[in-house]
Figure 1 (cartoon, rainbow, N blue to C red):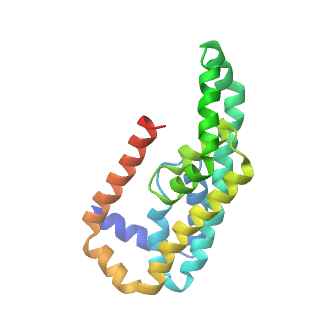
Figure 2: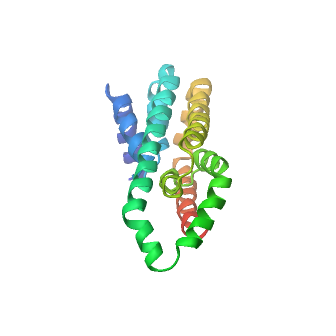
Length: 193
């Protein structure tokens, strides 16, 4: 089944509208969609290696724009729903303290989350909720997402067929590692943040 899913994704990656699909997935992944951009970026870059850096650019730009949408979700919903609830239950001051600590380290939090398998959407929404400076948020997002996507596409561009052969040979193991990192990101989000 995993092999059929991989073959289907590679077929999708070779589609003439693959860049558009990548942009949509990258945008929604940064604000609310649970599947990481890499799931589509890697096969697209493998299928059309010569355009790998173009795909890295598409993923970076749309991911940052999606992150801004996630920020807006956190910012707008917190003002209308979250803040009144916190004040009703007497947690307004505790949240203010949390927001201050979050914003003190906000650039690093956004940067690290943007590079890792940690669910980036959690950070985009949390940044909006805490009112992290939008300029800091945007710069950290551009640097992190750009570094991540350009590194992946750079490896694929330079090592193409051997990387593809490696992925195909160890597909099962790579899938298990990927899922473990994804679940680990959600556990960290739940218990650390």
